[in-house]
Amino acid sequence: MTNNNRPHPRPAHPRRNVAIVGTGSYLPERILSNADLEKMVDTTDEWILSRTGISQRRIAADNEFTSDMAAAAARIAIKNAGIAPDDIDLVILATSTPDTIFPSTACRIQHAIGATGAASFDLQAACSGFLYGMIIAEQFIASHMHETVLVIGAEKLSSIVNWEDRNTCVLFGDGAGAVIMQAAPEGKHGILASDMGADGAQTDILHMPAGGCRMPVTADVLAQKQNTIHMSGKEVYRYAVGAMNASAERSLQLSGLTTDQLQWVIPHQANLRIINSVRERLGVEEGRVILNLNRYGNTSAACIPIALHENCQSGKIKPGDHILMVAFGGGLTWASIVLEW
Ligand code: ACO
Image (cartoon, rainbow, N blue to C red; front, side):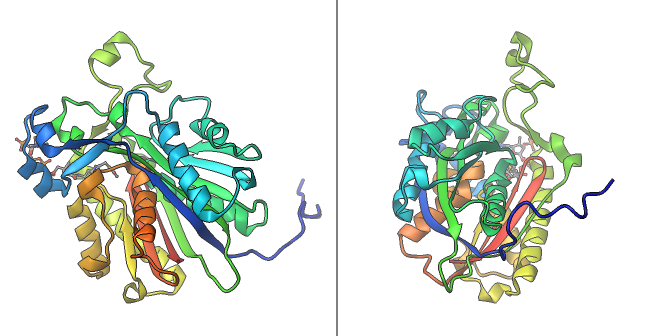
C-alpha cells in the first residue's frame, strides 16, 4: 500500500539558503612540542616536521573533557552570532572522543551552555564529522524545520592515543571549534554546494578496536592497548588524497565555481603532504590554503572549525569570499562544502 495521496505534513516552503553566522574555538593551554615527544618515544623533531608538518599540539588537562572544550567554543560562536543560547533549536556534536558512549556529549553541552530548547545528538564520522554536521544542519534550516543550529567539532584525542606508539602519537591534538548556522541574510548565498560519502570496506585502516560492543574493555584488551587509535598510515594517506580530491571536485562542480574563483581552501589538517598533494591536484596555489596543523596537529573533527574561526577573527576571511572546505576520516568518510562567506 502506498501513501501517495497523503498530504505533505508541513507547508511547502521553498528551500532557503543557509549560512554560518558566528564562529568560535577553544584550544587547551598545555603545549606538547616535538621536543617533548623526543623524550617519550623514539622520534625526532626533524622526522615529525618533515613527514607531517606538525611542530606542536595542544593537550587537554586531565579534568578537561570534550564537552568542556566544545561548550567553550560554542559560547564564543553564540556571542559572535549575537544570539541567545535558547535561540538554538539543535546541537550537533561531531566527535570520535565523546565524554561517554551514552548519553550523548551533545546533551551535556546543551545543558552547559543553556540551550534549553535544543534537540541534541552526537555524530560519528571521524575527521569528516564537522562537515557532515554542517550538511545535516543545512537540511534542517533549508527545509524550515529549524531556525538556528549549533554545529561543533570537538576532540580529546589525547585520551585515545597510545603514547608508546610513535606511528600515531605524534599526529594528534585536542581542541574544539563551533559554528552557528541560520538562514542566509538577504542577498547572501551561504552554502553553495556540498558532497559527502563513505567507504565502509576500509573500516580497519583507521580505527579504535575496543570500547564498543565488538570488543568490550577487559584487562587483556587494556594490556594490548586495543582501546587506542590503530592506523595503517600509508593506506590512509593513499585513500585520503584520492577521496579529498574527488569530493572537492564534486562540490566545486555543483557550485558552478572553478578553483581560481576560490579565495580559500580549508582542508582537514592531517598531514601537510596530504594537503599539498590535494592542493596540487586541484591546481590551487599554496597561499590560498589555510593551515593550522603546525601548531595544533590533527584535531580530527575540530580542525576545520578552529581554522575557520581563527581566520575570520584575524580578518583573513572576508565577506563575499568563496571557501572550499574538504575533509577525510576514519570510516572511511569524506565530505566537502563550497560556500560564500
Ligand atoms: N618518528 C620516527 N620514525 C617513525 C615515526 C616517528 N614518529 N613514525 C614512524 N616512523 C618510522 C616507521 O617505523 C618506518 O620505519 P621502518 O621503515 O623502519 O619500518 C619509517 O618511519 C617510515 O614510515 P612510513 O610509514 O613509511 O612513513 P610515512 O612517510 O608514510 O609517514 C605518516 C607516516 C606520517 C603516518 C603518513 O603515512 C601519514 O601521514 N599517513 C596518513 C595518515 C594520517 O594522516 N592519519 C591521521 C589520522 S587520519 C585522518 O585524520 C583522516
